[in-house]
Length: 61
Length: 374
Image 1 (cartoon, rainbow over the protein chains, first blue to last red):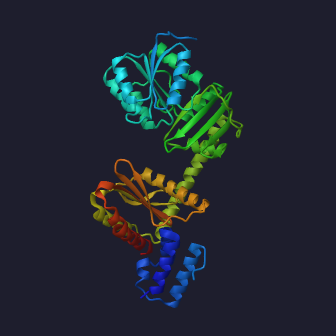
Image 2: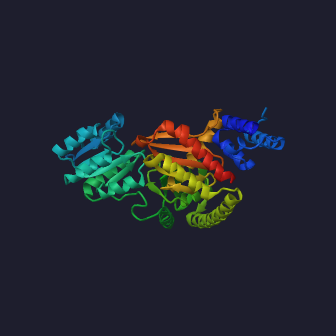
Image 3: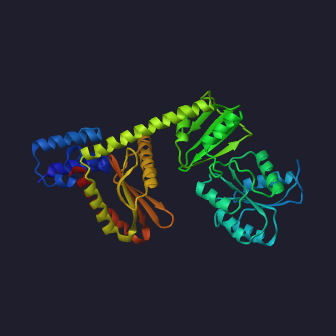
């Protein structure tokens, strides 16, 4: 299950609010709910992390 | 020019300093003046004692000016009424004129001008010429053409229904200055001409001439403005079509959005009075229940202002929502969601806030996200 993907979402919501969450959903095509359900593939994690960093304007750890 | 000193005037205003100043000014001009800060006491007084003219402030606690005049109106007395207000909404103006109010003074006003109008009301006994436009079926466009033709000099104050203010200065029929909501010159006049709901008033005794930022004849500027507005409208229509197409390209599933609204209605029941999901680009609703287009446009602007103000003040940004607690047991909740916002008008007495924030809201956000990504 997508633990890391869900975690990225948690950080985005915490730091950027719902605005950032919806932006991430729109740009990734992956909803928060789906992020918690699908597998944490390295490609997906990398993609979501990159998008989240762009949205928040800072690198995610 | 002095009027009959036996004319009796009652002034009702909860601002003691302003009331004193106005009363003293009229007394110095030989009127008999009674001042009252309480609208309830003034109502009793006016019912016992005849006054020739009652001047009422609109915005008062306990009973506002409109209600005061409406109650006096029912007594069918022959006194005349004038009101004082800081910002006359179009709705209140219409109500006041229906009640036979002779004049609406908009603060701030010149006292000599005020005296002249008071004398005219008491002398003529008919509704004084109102310089408030729109009510007399003259719009600003027409008024400017008249000023041009008659080579008039005037300062025109404009107030839009959504609270923006501006001014137009004309000298000898030539437009020399226009300011509106932070803009000036041609840009300002374009915005004013594009307004749908506004009122304007004309000041002939100009205390301070504004800075010149235009120097064209009124005809020229009206022609240019008409053309610019037509171009703007065509551009907006083009953008609206592009935007709607982009919505589809962005995979915004409007059908799922409507399903999300249905779920919200089901969860909130009678507590939900209205809701709209609208785009940030133009404040247009794309799905809703008991949709409120004006509210969507208003809160779109409010939210954007809030976001930029928080940022410039160095505050953290908006989180999931913000709530406005309104009078009459109403709540507005706005959820900012990237290119969209979701606004809700709720009845506080029929909404459990805890349930809303912890269960209904997360469900709504998930549903919206589904619509965005499906």
